[in-house]
Length: 539
View (cartoon, rainbow, N blue to C red):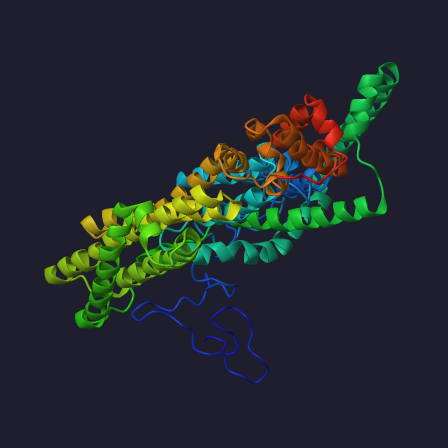
């Protein structure tokens, strides 16, 4: 006879209370012996790690945390971010590759959940994450690295959780946070294995090996340093300066790194199954309820596009001949509104594709016609927005914001082309991941193009007055693009960069190719060294 005080999840009910009836789908028999549904967040799709954390897992994550604490620069881009990313990747590989040996005498588990395996594309997303963090090694522009760092959180979540639809990708993006908290007890049990008698002998040997290795490095390193001044200087630059703020930063970075890597290892040991979210169908609306408002929107877009075609083919003459219209009023204000229109249109297309019925052939034809027309008209609006930005940048010069938003608008246009391709066969489950991959490749391409150098070269090529103050505030990545200036103004801009580089010197963690090249260019220009003491540049 079943005990009424035992709940469906295997926990005793309160004194004198009856357990609530178990929740189960209709027709499915009650399983009172488990496995029971997880009570953790997103437990319906994610049961947690499918295997315990071994001692190797705990040691690998702790070692990666030490590497992050020593090498990660918190105030700027540098090679330390790439070193941390590689150390974390190696730790996750080791944690997943080394099998966990059962403890002697431990009973076999009653319930074994089959592990969920991610596809081969998870490795591609992982490589993209490392590449985005590696941008800080070659580019000194802080705004660019922050964009790469934010994008790396998305690609990292995709590598760990998968997901194909926008719904499952959004859910998977939140899971690393919950996984980090769930991993604390998981890692604690793995750390406890280090104290087991079966592991103690091996632990002593490992500790002895590490101690001997450190002793050898210290002894021979000290001898080499005393024998050669250059080697001593190199060792001195690598050795950190011990101080209270440094130790505090090490502790903070170590804790955050172990927290994040523990969550990643927990997800890697038991990825979620988000296929139910991918296959979930939304409640459909009637044909009139979606076709009528979108049809009116298509008519509005068509009217706007008819006016814009005259602008696209009219060129500068249209801007100059229109009464009271200047480049600033035409390009600067209109571009932002059209960019918002493009983003909102993508949201409308996604909602219509989700809620519009498509069972009947007439429904599918109507979807293709209405959404296809809206996508094509929006593509023309994208072209109009980019045309406005081209005129504005050609007149007033490029800035980081103008270049970045123009790249985003071009990405919107690419997504619209993907929407048209998905509408041919009425299958768009691949669309969100391909759109994200295109955005990641575009961001990496922007980093490879060196945007600050592009901005400097574009503004210098103009025959109008160059804003030397703005050029001097660009990152050191712009230094190779200043050759078009006359020697005096070039020395002035390089002097401002030299002043910033001397004010914030780099150690090995902060080493960056862009800053290193800027130092070489400044060192080769005697006038730049003289102008470095003065930060006032005249146009």
